[in-house]
Image (cartoon, rainbow, N blue to C red):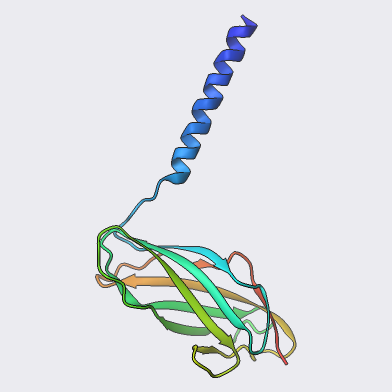
Length: 155
């Protein structure tokens, strides 16, 4: 009887693990765009560094607009929130869009990339970024953020 119970438990465990693996690999496309945080090159930056954030966007109709909305705010100066509009490269409209978005900013330096002026508070501060995107029909994704705050060492 004990042996049968052990075999039954092993079968149940394999079945549950299989279900979990299948659920993790499933990619679902919805009418409302879905954003997912992928990575940030560094969480510790100084003036002149390149901030490189990568996101994934999924959209059933593939009709995302040309703008990614970004809200950034520091912990030490919470009233100094900045709203940015980041131009997304043209993406061909196709069903079940699965694309990566690379966001690049030079910290406090005017150059070829958009500039995010992080001189809101002098000294060391942390910045929290939030992102969302809208499609052509007006469907707005959920708001997501970086996995952890980004440390900025201001002059």
